[in-house]
Length: 235
Image 1 (cartoon, helix red, strand yellow):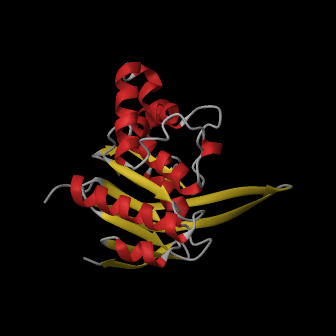
Image 2 (cartoon, one colour):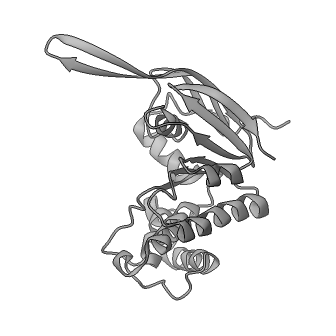
Image 3 (cartoon, rainbow, N blue to C red):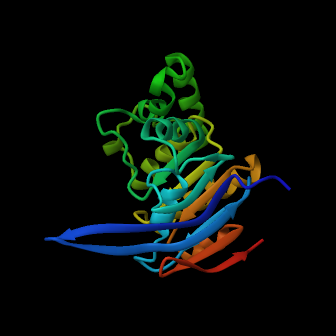
C-alpha cells in the first residue's frame, strides 16, 4: 500500500503565555498520531476548542508542533524554515477557509491567478487560461470579471475553491468551508468537494462542525480535548 500522503507522529502543540514572571503553558494537542492516504476524503470534527483547527494547521505547515514530526508527501515539514514551508504550501497544498479571504480590489479571475503567479511559477497567459477554466468548471463562467463584493457568499467560496486548485495541489485543506454559508450554498460546496474526490482522486481534509458535510466524506476523525476520540471509515 502507498505510504501516507500526510503523517503525524506523536505531535503535540503547546502555547506559552507570560503573566509577569510566570509562564502559563496551555496544551492544545497533547499527543496525536495520524495517517491520511492519497485519495482519502477525511473530515475532522469536534467541539469548539478541541484542537481540530490547530491540527489542520500542523498538517498544512501553517503552524509548527511543539514536539513530534509532521510529514507531507514523504517530506518532514516540521523541521523546515518559513521559506521552505512557503514553497511547499504553494506547490503542494490548496487551502480553503470559512472566510474566503479574496482580495477585494481584484476580480474573480485575478484572485484565482494569484497562486500561479507567485514566484513566477506560471506565465500570465497560461495562468489566465487555467483560472478561467477552473471558474467555468465551478459554474462561474459569467463571473470572471466580478469583484468579490459583486458575488454572493456561495460564489465567493467557489472562487476560493478555484484558487485552492490553481496549482494542482496534491492535498486540499479546508477549515469550516461552509460555516459562513446558507444551506443552499453549503450544498453546492459539499457536492463540489465530493466530485473532486470521486472524479480526480483529490486528497481532501476538511475541518467542520457541519454533521451533514462530515457524513458525506469517506472518513471521520473526531477530536476531543486535543486527542483522537474516534476514527471511522464511512464508505
